[in-house]
Image 1 (cartoon, rainbow, N blue to C red):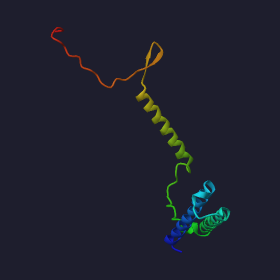
Image 2: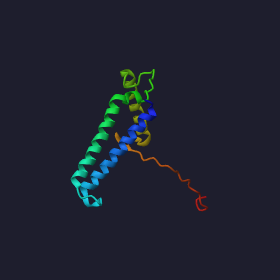
Image 3: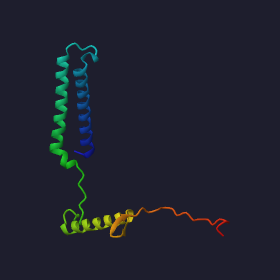
Image 4: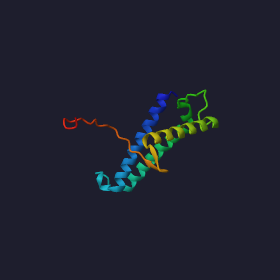
Amino acid sequence: MSKNLYEATILQLKGRALEAYAALDLLLKNPTGIPDHSNWVDEIVRHAKTLAENENAIVKLQQYFGKQMQSPAPQSKKMSASENPEKKEQLKQIMAETLKKRQKELYPVAETDGNPQMVIPTTSKKKSKKSKRDV
């Protein structure tokens, strides 16, 4: 079975199942919404069977052919950080150091009389113009 045929079959079964679900939803919420139906219980049973059949068919196709139709995941030659504990620890240290540097850049602290105080950086410096009076 080709991958395209498999996917087309799954999509068609899903479409039929959704159609049956929509009919059930409409019948159960507002049975008079579908004209020309007087035997609502039989209609509900019919759509419920259609829904169950299509969903079961999807499950069975996925069970027997799903793994064959999935594209294989690319295998990497390098171990990821989660597989290598040393690499994971190095990454944690690097991230912690980077975080500390960023905090110092964003929130510098000045020591005055032994009490640390946050320094609020200014983004623009105004140049004072000397007036004729100052000269």
